Image 1 (cartoon, rainbow, N blue to C red):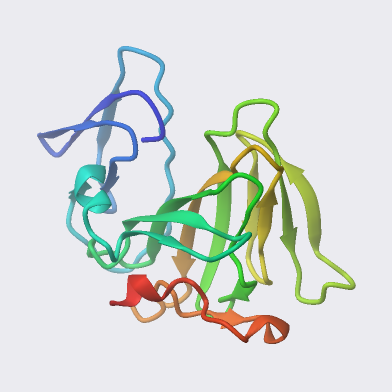
Image 2 (image 1 turned 90 degrees about the vertical axis):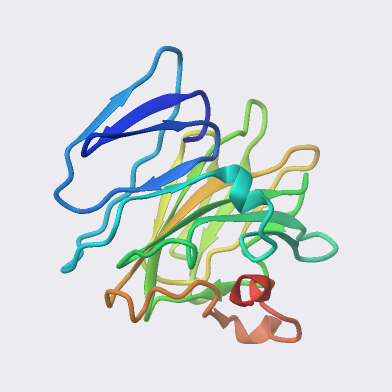
Length: 211
């Protein structure tokens, strides 16, 4: 849930979703979603062979776990990283969370990729006008697959390649990220990345999630 509140009913169980709460819904489930006011809810899915349990994730709980919510990066690339559906949830392929940069900072830095294990998409949010960012996707900086302006509500698919982005000065970039593992369970690992060789002097910035 990105904003507002929603009541969700699954298999006779009801949950109230507030901002940044998440829920993992098992395959073949019937879902009823109700809202009384304007609410923004994002849904991601990935086919799985096996079944996994229904799990509600409170953002209050996530925010208190230093391996699920942490500040990372350094000068020019500081961001607030939040893992909603990660090691805290039993799932087959999905990893989901969101990131907010500091104003004018880079995220997904140093540039990294994980194409052998995970494909990914970003959905940008909490970026009111005039905020915007620049998103890159590339394997070679000389010939980028994507170099585009991104604004609130945009989405970018990243099946492969390094994928850093940057916000304009005075504004942050915010995005919901969702990854799907190629191999069910085996490839569902957050923070296992290949850093672009030219920027391998430092850590990936994702180490806290592996603790």
